[in-house]
Every structure is written in C-alpha cells, then in structure tokens.
Amino acid sequence: MLKLRTGYGIPVMSFGKFTGNLDYSSFVTVGAHYGLEGFYFYSENVGFGGLLSYNRNTIDAQRFTGAYINSNFIYDTAFVNVNPFRTVIGLVGFCFDLPLNDYAAFTFKMMAGALTVTKPAGIVRVQTEDGDELIFRETKDTRAKFTIFTAAGMRFSPLPDWSITMEVEYIGAQFDFSYKMNEATVNRTNHVQLLMLNFGIAYFIE
Image (cartoon, rainbow, N blue to C red; front, top):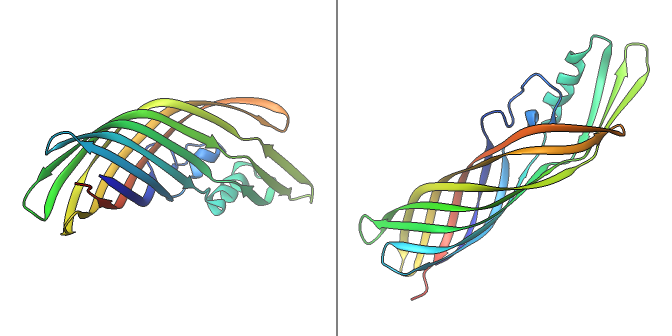
C-alpha cells in the first residue's frame, strides 16, 4: 500500500496552551501536515512499513503580543515576528487493516521512530509607555527524540485498488531546548504533543 497523506496537526496538553510564561510553545496554533506512507501486507490484515510526515504549526501573534503587554504594566505595544514550529516524523511499524465489508475497514497503526522538532527563531519588539523600545531576540534550536505513534481510523474503497482513509493520530515527546535570548543561553523543557487528523489516498498494488 502506498499513500499520500495530509491533514491538521492540533497542539494538545501544554503545547499551545498558555502556561504563564512568554514561551513560543504556549502560543502554537493548529497547523498542517503532509506526508507519505508505505506498507507491505504479509498477511491479509497486517502490514509492516514506514511513514514520513512534515508538520508546520505557526505562532498566534495576537495572543503572543497580548501576553507580552499583560506581562508588564510599562509595556504599551508589542510587535512579533516568529517563525513556525516545524516537526518531521519518521517512523516504522505495523498497520492493521480489519475489513467490515468489501468497501470499508477499520485501520490501526502502532509505530515508533524519530520526532524531530525545530523551535523557531523570532523577534519581539516592545514599546514602553515612555516611548522606549525593547527588543527580545531568540535563536532557533532543533532536537530529535525517539517516540511512539498510535493511530486509528477508517478506510473506504470506492474503486478497486484505491482507498480513501481518515485517521486520528497521536505523537509527542519532551524536548530540552537550548537557545539564546539576547545572547544569553536559555534551557527550557517543552512537551511537543500533536493530535493529527489525517486524510489520505491509498493505492494497493497486487
């Protein structure tokens, strides 16, 4: 089975939720992902293969600037220019295909591999009530972790050898980022966790 996949990456848990500090990961929005899958079914219901996916989650600039302004009473306005969080997922594992009839099947995947995350670089400019400008610069950092991936969904076959798939997937890991903020080294732990809604077009080679 060869499959093209796309969908939405939804930040969950502390990722994308304001946690009380001015950290990019607290302001991540729903993003998009794209990828490829390939599985060899050595039995009717069980296949082994791999998955490669690229995810892009932008920063909510409006929430982020608001958090900066609210963090200090002397801050009047703020301007944000921050790149997206980017993740690359490379996994191998098993796909289980459990047909209901000739046209539909339950699907389930258990996989493991690398989750590589790039914490973005960015600049925040803050103007105070006195008209002074403060600039906060952060450099990017890229880290990789071994992680486990799970997915469940449905497969529909409107045409012979072709299928449309819909799946809900979860992947996540804890990362110890090390980067510079205005030349000072910062070490911070972030939980990068994504719930992905995935849609795909699959072709089965006899």
